Length: 484
Image 1 (tube, rainbow, N blue to C red):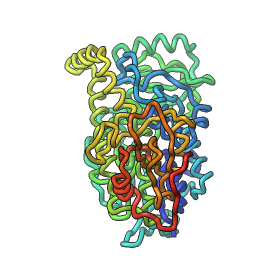
Image 2: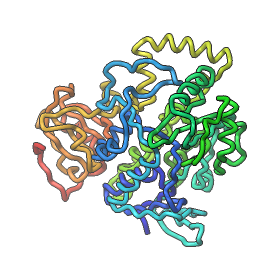
Image 3: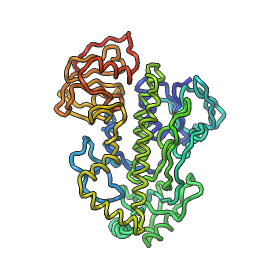
Image 4: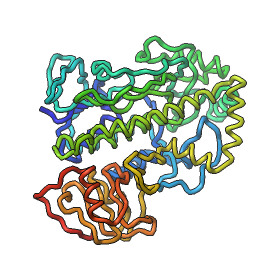
């Protein structure tokens, strides 16, 4: 029996597999495609996702294959300067094609010992009090203690689990492609700039190696979005909007996406959980979809691992949905608003002009930037200082950086007093006696996902929160306070 079976080997599935393997969980990833999908459906990582890969020691790998772009994303394509002094060490977008992100996360999961079966697809499952029996399309049955659906917006796991997916169907669709073109790059840029004055859903530009990335509105919403568009369809739509097809040829990838907006009414059905696009879909405005899935997995991984290991306090797994579903609701709100603001109708354009004026205010830019970059999220962990429930950015310590202490996925007590202890929990929580000029608190208890679960200097109060987030103390482990 596997501890966890993950259906879907995209970014959310592979991130979740890595997080589980950090805690020794037996993980099997089932991926339908025999070969990695070459389609470039996402182009970058936002600040919070960059922080996550940095927390796990993976940032150098991603920086090697990506390009930094200043700012943290434009709301509805409105070009304004980024807000000053954002609370992150990564105030940029890391431009990196999704196939590269997929590969890097899959390599990490494999390095940590996750079993990955490509060309394997779930067909059905049955669950009971002890686990989930999964049937593959080749008739093979597997058994897992938990099943997580990371299988995309058309998730079979979600449908078989009986989880509703309310929202709005797609009313608009775009064709997305990576192609070569015979038109010189300078002429492509001139035409694209002219078209975008009235059609913000249009774009074409070079990505390197003679490849152009194209996005153009489709003629209609396809009946079956799983069927990719043809090169002729792309050429037809380019001529309709730009008056030329730019001589596009030799497509590297062609895909389509729409503005369907849906949110699962729950993230759990018994021993079945959802993450990533299986739990929420929305237009790609702001580029939040892939990032949202990675962040779902980061929240769920340590909690599910604790359940498997047997030390999870009551209700810990359910805090996943309690914390992440409201975040998805907020993303859906943001993308719905951006969709409206891209309309060429007079009403939405009037609102767009007004918002553009408001974005001259730094506070407005900051609010929108924090939402797009997911660095303003505050989970409900109780009443307390403003920092409580938020993730703590990569502050400088006297001995190095905070994120260097978080790479193995355990909790962390960052103790500036030297008088506290995690004795009994040191198998789950590091104790770092260190100081930082950037932390105005005597000590903070960080969950494995980097969010602050406690602030203070009282040992009894700390013990209460260790019990809440890390379960009953382990009598076998004795670890007095030590400087790291």
